[in-house]
Length: 159
Image 1: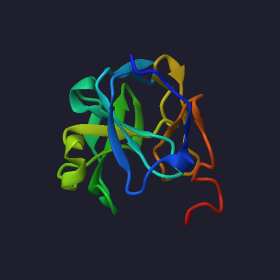
Image 2: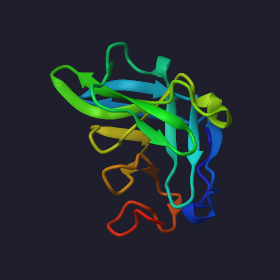
Image 3: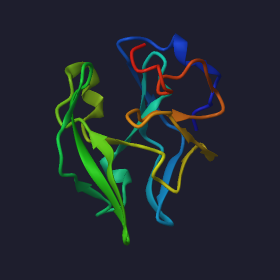
């Protein structure tokens, strides 16, 4: 399990770094465990809490459904495609994304999915419930070891 050492988001690099994370990541939605892995990646970008990317195979079959709507573009990783997350009768629209053909610097993200913590019942990293990054655009997850000024609050979109 990865040890969660103190990290200050102001110390994260730009362009973002990618690093393997072998700790436990579990996601519950609509009362169901929909994802479980010990083989994720973290993207570390200045003023953002880590964004976790889980292998597609770690998701329960059928919970990720291609979403209607536009793709978005990340200046670093490339074009993102979105998924709705479905569990029983609950749907979290455009709650997850992937980079099908990421920039070569982030090629390890191929076949991996990130998701917003806010619409989920809970997201656990090493058994700790994460807090979603503030704002309605960003997908970082805040844990006890994360400090510093976090982008996403009103007035922080152009840092």
